[in-house]
Length: 256
Image 1 (cartoon, rainbow, N blue to C red):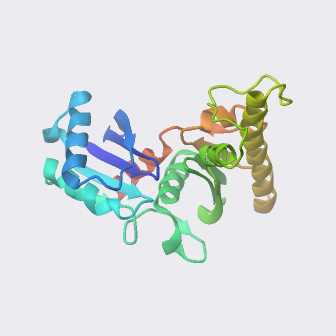
Image 2 (cartoon, rainbow, N blue to C red; image 1 turned 180 degrees about the horizontal axis):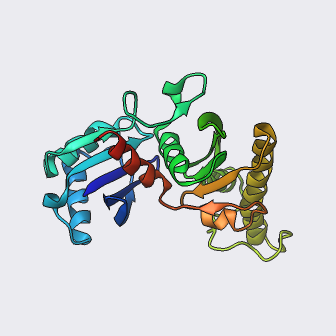
């Protein structure tokens, strides 16, 4: 069983694979103050929660956009069981042709989704990852990772709106209002955040399509992707586990 761990700015997503089968998926909050032993206890508890233990582990791979947490996570896994632990970064085989100005600057999360998209979907493609930040990464027909865009995430935008204004409350985004034109403050905010982000994605997809000069496969992943992409006018494939799939594929590439 291979442990795949994606450390994001807000959440750590943990999955376990046996070959290409996802056995379980779990999330916990990203906490830079936690010590390796605390993460080891949390991971061991997650394994037990889903009916597994340390004896089932054969290897692990970590991606992180919070680099200081990588050593802590590696120590945590090693304390559960001494296994082969890979990290996404310089030197790891990805199978990608990264055609950006400085390939070393490409974030681990973008590497993961690009690897998975190249393996699973027709090219050219773009991947929209809706996490703390909303990112778009583009692969052309030849499989070159051309670059992308980084935008404030949906929740960051909402938090800024509420915290920087005196009369706008904190709201949830459980559902979009029936009409774009809101008739009360809450619906106006939901309309702006949900429909506004959907329109932004539609506009960006159109611009990516024009710049690459042909139609695209569009894939979306991340926590709020289902809520936003449901309001988009472009065809978008939802793939909740794209980052973990990319990690699994890279582990296989580097273990042969």
